Image (tube, rainbow over all chains, first blue to last red):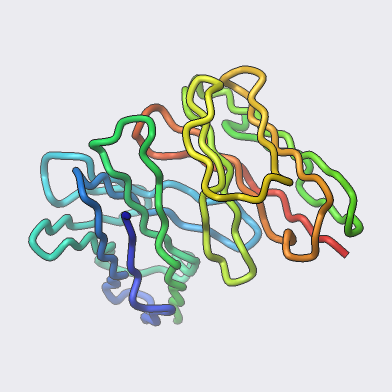
Length: 116
Length: 111
């Protein structure tokens, strides 16, 4: 069975500092990896994905993530955090080998708090 | 234009009632999903449909019955509502194994 671990319930960072939100995954086939953000009382917004190719992927709002196959990780990063980045962040994985039957499995979420 | 829209946004109902949540996507995607987000914000897949065909049924009680009249719509009907069904239900769609796009959610409260 596939799974995603987000080891930190909350990450606190000062505005202007770099941020990292950690994610590790387990999947038997090809990992397709995603990051989403959820603001209060809103749906999930897609940030970025890794399917194949360059291990460093860039997404919306200045976020990027690095795929590391050996460590089965896909950490989300941003060079300079903004207060408006404060939200709940979810990592998700699909098994790309199973076609349309693949589930999109989410981690438990990490709350990012950016302070002045 | 809203890509994935679900109605209603809020639903308050008594135990034992039957209710439906509707979802429509205008993205031309082949695959649609229902997810449940509990009070701890955990997201769990309930169902997945591809071209109107049920692909994933994630051991959800059979009081929950999805229906997909066409590939742009996936509705969720819930019979005999229980207190534990209170949650936020999200509809989503994707093209094959790409990223999923989510609706704004339906907050269901069973009293």
